[in-house]
Amino acid sequence: MHRTACLALLLLSLCLGGCSTTVFQSLPTGTTTDCDPAWPGRWEPVASADDDMKPQGIVEIAADCRSATTKGERKPIRLTLVDTRAGQYLQLHNDSGKPDCIGPGNTRCGAALLRYERDGDTMRLYDPDHAWIAAAIKAKKIDGYTVRPDTKGLKTKEPTYNNFIAGDGKRIARLLRKYPELFVREPLMVLRRVPVDAASAEPAAPASEGN
Figure 1 (spheres, rainbow, N blue to C red):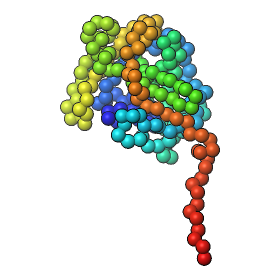
Figure 2 (figure 1 turned 60 degrees about the horizontal axis):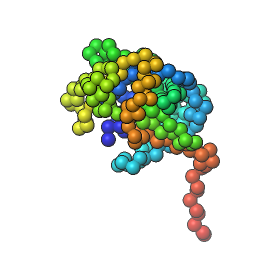
Figure 3 (figure 1 turned 90 degrees about the vertical axis):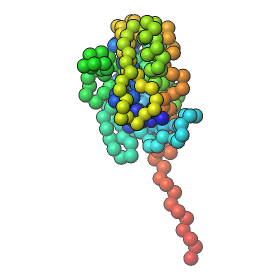
Figure 4 (figure 1 turned 180 degrees about the horizontal axis):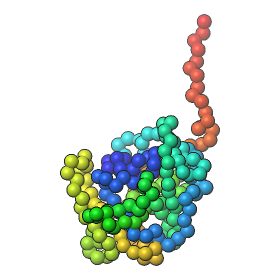
């Protein structure tokens, strides 16, 4: 499925080439944090019902939330959690630190967002419904811009959309409250915290045969 190819588990960041993309011109009005106290620690991806196979690898998020390690490889990350009246959303910053952009000349820029839920030791991330958003923009329900990028040569059979949703923080917040359909119902990724005792446990040594 395109989601496993487009969402790098280690970086928890959105890929902007060969995948559907929705960019919000502004962050919705709300409270923001770059390091939620619940994030640091070890997290294991959990397969959803329609996945062909369980994702592999445990992600360890550093105490300052600025790096993540999996399979012994440590890489920088930067996330922003936005708490709004419509719910919580996670901004995925790209490696360059610049806004995400789409369209000819990359002139329509903003923030890539996922809807975010945390229930105790489980986090769920929900992708925008790119097809619904494209249709809503064309129908003028939402102010913005949408284009179907050229996917020739890419290994994907799924429709691909590049969307830009226009508006300041207040307008984006209103859209999120008015249209829950902006995000899909099934999670893009589910992460479950690895208990401390399980993380520190060593594999059991094989039993020795009697002499």
